[in-house]
Length: 207
Picture 1: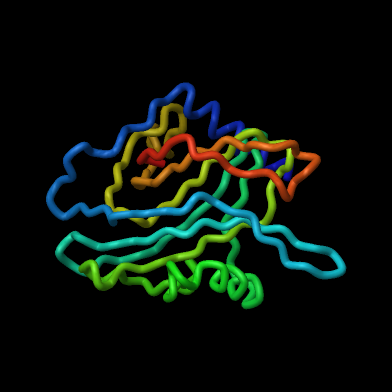
Picture 2: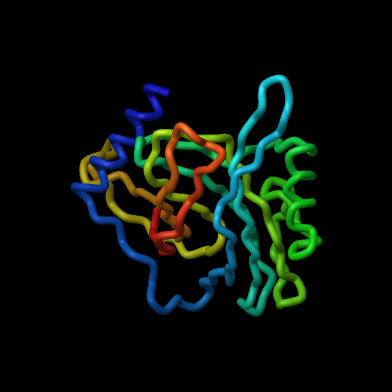
């Protein structure tokens, strides 16, 4: 955990001294970004001798690019307390079953992010509904940001502000167009089951 926090601090310092480029307002030929709808994250708990709490969101992706596109997503949640929480890989069937039952009416064909194929087919009829899950995070956090990559093929290579290669040239940093969803957290952390995430903003960033 200490190493993870240090890594986040380094990233924050890096961001202060180097402004990342913004996604293109008008995408160039060959670039695409999937159409997106999303649900605000919700809590869900698996009961047992030691109850396990999770958070999840549902995203609906539609490919209107005019061609089938590759899909290699990743998602993480970062708290204002500098905790980085990657989306779960190997989500239990029990957890997914409980999520799917909760949303069966609206998302009858819901699937897990980790089980989505490596292609998103074009067209409205091929819209994919995906559940993304995280283990519970720091109860003292006052806000979180969710980052999801793989929803666009837009990339950019920029020079690192300080790192050099063996020839003295700036090391290239490759950034991907990434969805950022920001939430504040309402409720007393002493009553974790009652806490909710309040949507604040949706932006696209290069990260």
